[in-house]
Length: 153
Image 1 (cartoon, rainbow, N blue to C red):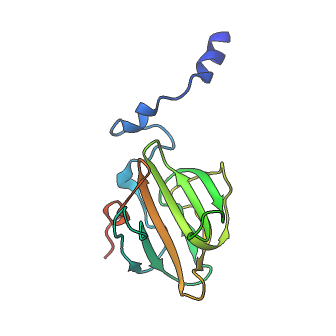
Image 2 (cartoon, rainbow, N blue to C red; image 1 turned 60 degrees about the vertical axis):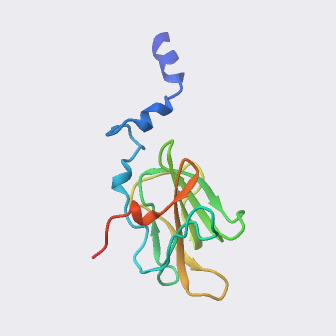
């Protein structure tokens, strides 16, 4: 019916993302983050005013990189300086996550991804050791991922 078509064109309210315990698909509760890859944190978060706006996780070349939460890929490419091949996933109106220095990108812009889905293969920076650069941004500002990721052993 005509009323159904009108209702479907209504934009979704960004306020939904701010409601605690929201059950809307694609808006994960931030307490549900998961580690994007196996490995040791070799560079810690230094704060939003420094170059180190995320963490670096060591691993091996070609190791799988997973989306840390459900969302939509908003960037997949190598156009941003200092990130190599990069994937950015938007999780809701508040949160984005970024995955840098990949050797291979397995998703494209617009792809919907689930938490844990393989989105890339680990690469390295220049001649350095293989690693994943991982950032979580809240309202566009980098936050310490370790405050959101589950504690490890």
